[in-house]
Length: 250
Image (tube, rainbow, N blue to C red):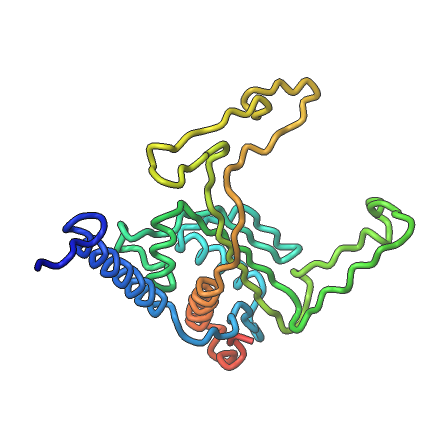
């Protein structure tokens, strides 16, 4: 007597075996990719203590490092101690010469989705803590120019230890109206927005944000990289020979 053929035909066992094999392979690849970026998360070193260095020199070095990193400065506020950069697209798996990703997981993420980085540098007095935001019952408005309330803090005249604080943000591009199919890419479609900015006629002259980028999170690994680049560069300055112990992540 011959054995009974399983339901679904002679290839039933083969299909089950292949399904099990593919499931196991997918689980193994997922564990491998997770392991590439594994480890205990450390506190981001996004702050650099500066003592014994001229503020103007440090400010110019930060601008130069931002430019060398492919993110030229857009905002250069020497009075407020602020530098904000233009965005730069993140490196993908098809750009092996790019070394701006923390691990292979981040490289895969930047390959699947179009993402970019932008950086923000702030010079503040050492151990500065922003005052709490109060909620007064009456809003007095902005201080009048020349009044005592209009006395702004000027970093150029500050004489004391400084801190440089670095933030790096990741933004992802998205396509408005995109509707992805759950089974096949052939089911991809787009919705039409009758109120889209390119279809609206604004008679009031108001502006409409046409940006297609949305913020995701901070890139703490890249923050630490920038802090180390700035520290290495500042230590090469002639005036840093006596302040080497004071240029360190804090």
